[in-house]
Amino acid sequence: MDPALAPIFARGVYFPENSVTVNNFRLVQCLAEDFIARGGRLLRERATDVVLGPQGPRELVTEQGRHSIDAIVVAAGAWSRDLARRLGHRVPLDTERGYHIMLPDPGVMPRMPVHIGDHGFVATPLEHGLRFAGTVELGGLQAPPNWERANVLLRHGRSVFPGLREDGADRWMGFRPSFPDSLPVISGSPRTANAYFAFGHGHLGLSFAAITGKIVADLASGRSSGFDLAPYRIDRW
Ligand SMILES: Cc1cc2nc3c(=O)[nH]c(=O)nc-3n(C[C@H](O)[C@H](O)[C@H](O)COP(=O)(O)OP(=O)(O)OC[C@H]3O[C@@H](n4cnc5c(N)ncnc54)[C@H](O)[C@@H]3O)c2cc1C
Image (cartoon, rainbow, N blue to C red; front, side):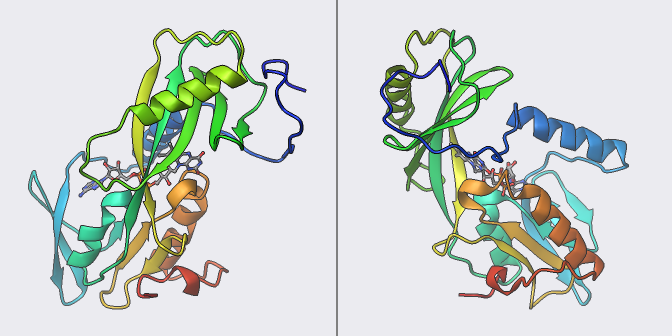
């Protein structure tokens, strides 16, 4: 089925309806461009605090200044905990760090993403190369990356893809925002009007980004999303 794979597998499971993006960074860039084209304004500033008034959030304080606001969505991934606390909510958010190795000119390409169960990583054919991604490291937000974890992915990749070319290999570490119950927070604030939360999607934040955005838009507009959102409340602990 996939001639790129070494003949070392006794069996596999085929998921024909699995979806994949060919370039996750470009996807996010295109979404940002679309947001701007529709009149959105993108500011690259680190938010540090929220000033509350009687109607809810009034000002967003950033390292660059202050912005007048009438609503806020906290969607800062693994860094959301402090901003949630400023709005009165303590959440047990942690990070499951993961690694990837990108090979821009791998010489071999699988036909579709392949999850190598024995070694717990995924090989994904992208428009700019072959990506091996996986591993879970409970290392918090501050510790430096342990690049040996990315090198391990490459070692396993060699055993799966004979003839792999490794020139220009690029290593990366990312922070999966995760809760102990493996569910995200998608919620309005029970304490503050016009404050919303969307974070903690763990291993599936890209997959669930679009539906999360739609649900948050429904919440902020007072529309029903049609889902029971109780499992995702910010005050469930
Ligand atoms: C190795 C690896 C492989 C993965 N593979 C997949 C996969 O195949 N499919 C899938 O669905 N998911 C996958 N994920 C998970 C996915 O990457 C995350 O779930 C997703 O990125 C979380 O999205 P987010 O928007 O909540 O957070 P992020 O993507 O982390 O975005 C948060 C943003 O908030 C910004 N920010 C933080 N603090 C502040 C602040 N104070 N002020 C302003 N901005 C701030 C950050 O700079 C960042 O841009 C993978 C993760 C890793 C590490």
